Length: 226
Image (tube, rainbow, N blue to C red; front, side, top):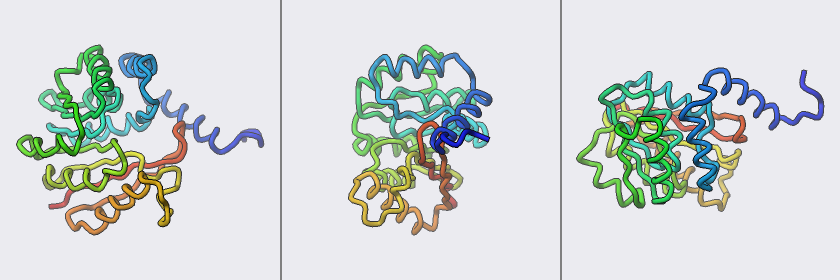
């Protein structure tokens, strides 16, 4: 039994680190990328080790040839997915900040995976219309500005096919997502996305709540039915 003074948050983090250390590589290009992100001053908001591993396993299950990532940051989640792609699989990743994109390029190049990823820099809502010619995508990962989540979901539907898997990060918001009267733009945008998701007959969706080194949050997971 943990000591009485141990908080639940500490237990969550300890368990997360236990599984992360056990089930993910201890070093290599993934750890290098995290170090490079911190050295470059990027915010420490990338997915956790276990969340990255979840994305990798999802790619291994679905075997996508075309992946769309909305929100690149330093490319940590991109590395997890790109490393599991089939030999002819490719990722298009959208990033608003040019400096973040440059750090990600270096991380991907260091890992020998840059040839699997096309990075496009700019406001995602401005870049998405040009992707119609690259559609449909088999897997879409949304991890960008939360107020735009409803629009990102609409574009995900436009760029999908039956069987496309859609993953959205940071949807629980430390439990704030349950607050119908919230004035937080991130919560409002995410709640509107879920309202749209719930009313869309083409989607079957659920939420995986998670606790760990990043506190209390969760992922939305949906599949396009038709």
